[in-house]
Image (cartoon, rainbow, N blue to C red):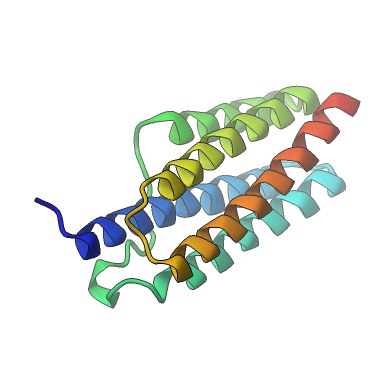
Length: 148
């Protein structure tokens, strides 16, 4: 049986890996786009994920921190691969649609973490704040996509 502490570490590690993927995906997108407004947004969201991980890192032992660890399968990985493919065609709407999907996957992970009920109130508050920020990022991407 997993103890609450083990479950908490697992939840936080999962979120950190999602943020590692999000950071790397947006960093790659920023490096590959020529559009200044997209580059600025991608940089902001990449940095946001790094900040999220710094906040989450304080809740788990250092040896459990998934520094640089990313997923090599699953929905979020496919979302970032779709963004890379869209960048090669320079189709703004497709790029933004892929980004929106990536944010959907991140939001889903955050919602699952909040539904776990196994984390302390302090951690729950941090996770909820980050989820709200990702929801805001999602809404920004969606609005840009709708205008494209």
